[in-house]
Length: 320
Image (spheres, rainbow, N blue to C red):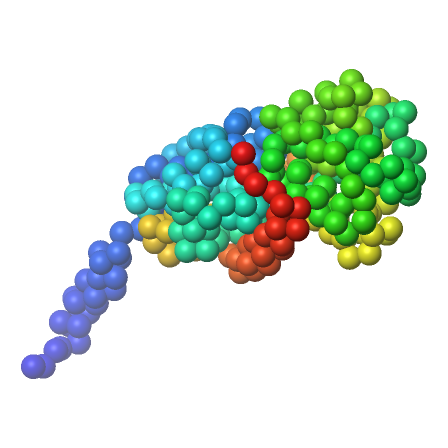
């Protein structure tokens, strides 16, 4: 068969258009971003920002939805089982702690959730009342002198606020008494009221009380000091090797096509940078914007599930 130059010229536009016809661009319907926690948590800041910033860029509405329950596992399972190809999950360190606690989650975070990117991270803060221990060194000395005398609050058995304190106890050689609550704000209220002596929690929770002088931050859990609280020592300065951060990651449902992850990361990269609006908002809450892509998130998850499983086993924790 002979194709003339004129025939080739006529056929070329159709040949170039063939791949586009074979594969529809993503997204083809509204994109749903799910949070597995109640509204008002730290995940809402980047989550709602993503919705506002990405909706015009994606050409489809982006919807933010909270689906809380069972420490986050209800919302995570919902996303893992979604099959519409347009569902994402923004979740915290709980995606690594829950598998350490329970084998019957109803989903496997390593196979049922596809990593998209780390979103942000921040240190936990060790907080006491204004009349509590004046320093982290004094806190450790009291705890060692009187095992189980000091009490700490957490957001519930097996929560990240519980496990980070359990890891501190194990690595520092101290024993505290655990008092679970149903949320970080309730713990903060309990500390101020003298119901418990301390708690480890997200820096955004006690920040206004620290600034007002009604509470004191005596340590941060990151490997180094936090930019927002540069005068506060890191736990690792007195407990070498200790490090724990609160991080949030963006995952896709297993049924999402690869191009959904590529497209999301392409659009998200326009939001990062130290001078970005989202970066400034998070910095004001003591958090660092990351948006580093799939591989760092996958590596963080692989490293932390066994780490928290070891903490859980050493402490003999059983989920309620």
